[in-house]
Amino acid sequence: MTDDKPLILLIEDEPQMRRFLRVTLQSQGYRLIEAETGEDGLTQVASRKPAVILLDLGLPDMDGLDVTEKLREWTSTPIIVISAREQEQDKVRALDAGADDYLTKPFGADELLARIRVSLRHLARQESGQEEVIFDAGTLKVDFSKRQVFRNGEEVHLTPIEYSLLTILIRHADKVVTHAQLLREVWGPRQANQVQYLRVYMAQLRQKLEDDPARPVFFLNEPGIGYRFRSSD
View 1 (cartoon, rainbow, N blue to C red):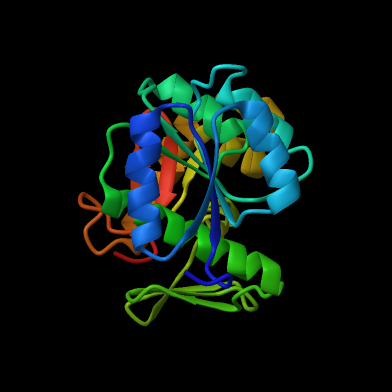
View 2 (cartoon, rainbow, N blue to C red; view 1 turned 45 degrees about the vertical axis):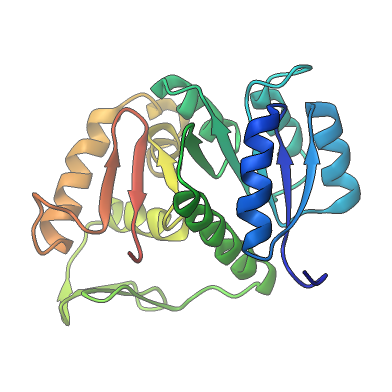
């Protein structure tokens, strides 16, 4: 391994899970540092500045949600929650607290590595300060400078709300965006519980931009949590 490989911080107290992740990540060339408590994890983030944080919620000294909230006070480092908690409300709370993604244990190595690659791509775009003027996902293309949307080469008219939802989802492509986050950004904080608004407009986006709205390729539903825009397979 060389020092130019991404540095991953694992905050996890379970020895078997640490062993599994250590083997998985180091086999792919990632550098890894480990912390068994929330406090140690916070210290490691400040001192080592990892590229991605893998965070368990059930830590011995503090809840992983508290760790997430503390980190989001001063860093935007991608956080992928890895937890045995599988209730929808736990996932929503983690994502709303500032986590970028959520994996429920047990999970496969390939899925974890894919989520890490997504986080690293987002981080690279943030650090470059470059925003794509043209977003191209095959059959769907968006020209942000002209506010034009194309499906299979033909321009599609979107309402202002539909366009706002689309741009937010693309900005967070391949990551779950919670219902509350979408509602706050599009309709404001007073409408953060009006999930029916989202269902209506997401159905309209699928109708306009998916080849088969009943089997969406781009606009994926995460039941009880939110939506994920899939930019690639």
